Image (cartoon, rainbow, N blue to C red):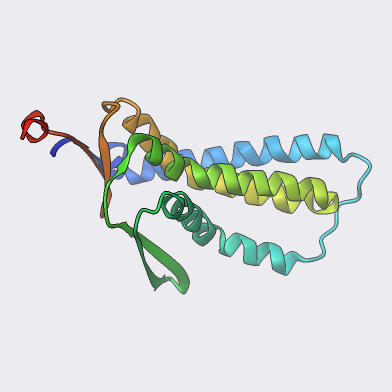
Length: 184
């Protein structure tokens, strides 16, 4: 296999630009979620109870986001190695796959946190309407965390359809099968 392209969004776009875009998307999505829920539940009183659970959910959002990336890999029986560390007193999980995955699997891996956590927050806001402001914030933070995933999807989209995606320390390699390897 040959490397078609290496993708590192922090090198391509810059860490500060990605952080700024994520912050802006988080604010805008909170406004959209909060206004939508406040229009739907206009007759429901907002409660500030269970603030500790909200803070716990907010602190665990990054870890939940990373775990959602692992679920499609486990579902496709791709061997995954998880390594836990503590950075700034917060649990940090490092994911390493044993073998490359397909382009379609990469879409599933990168979109899983967006689909799972955002859907769960919307569903929980409907189940517990007096806490819709908490779930709006959690969904907005998750959308902000999904911005790098969306940028990776944008770059992987232009890759050949039969490519393999290999995870690196700070990005992805897009691998294509060499024609000579197929012939032999």
